[in-house]
Length: 188
Image (cartoon, rainbow, N blue to C red; front, top):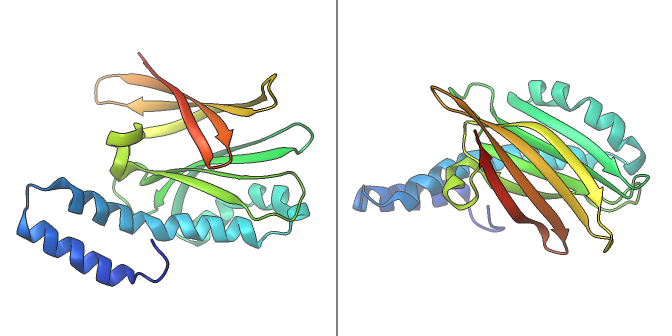
């Protein structure tokens, strides 16, 4: 996903690494992530293509856009502070993917200003680092402005297991570098 790096060449390199040491998990994770990167770019490009005053209308058409681009998507959107900040949280993957979501993303922008949409993606392939796997499904979100004027988000996911469902809750804080996970709870 780095600028100037050919995705096909990267895939070939990861496949060589995979063949050299089949027990090494990093090439497998990288190959799975590479497949999800174009989806992330597609959604980010779509949201950035909308004029600031048309973004709310564009969010309402996000399901239609996803269907036209063969993307399975579940999303929630909320604004805080009279359009101070708009946040779209999405779980998505290719429509023809057998199970679950390949990525979980946050897209946000400052109100109606003409700034680009920022995004942060948690790829299911890297769930060991952040906890959001293919079986996680977004169920609820809440944005708030804290007394110190920071923006926080509480996200709730259902983690579907074969025999029971668990609830995974995240509390995030918006920083200059994106969303920082400040708390994560798993509840039965």
